[in-house]
Image (tube, rainbow, N blue to C red; front, top):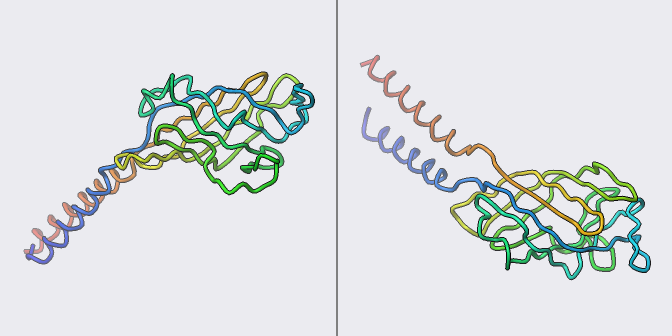
Length: 192
């Protein structure tokens, strides 16, 4: 291999290796708190016809955490934005108007989540269960924004859990570049 080819290949490998330094966020985090709905009258929740959730004081407590979220339980409170779930997901203002200026549903301890999809699993007078997907991000540069799943359950209080675990695409890119380089070097030796 000539010097220019070696330099280009080495530069490419270093560039891809730099991408591979960050890893996906892994683990689960759960929240608990109180809420009202757009159909709450006199403190009585009417969950059967609700379409909006208002988190009390826009705060929820972290009630469990593992993986990269470890250490957030106990004294950490998540900042939560109110949201509409029917006819589609949207963050809402305190008065129920949409859209709210925020895009992040919750944030705590340097982590935040943006909802990308929502499904109503069940809705009755006894409770609401929602599920979907979202992207969890971190202020920690060693962690990549990661797609994951979430669930929300509400009856007299609410619980929310979300988690993220995905394979690292940068590792696969690095492996691919390495195999291409190996193939090119073998091909070059065969023609010499």
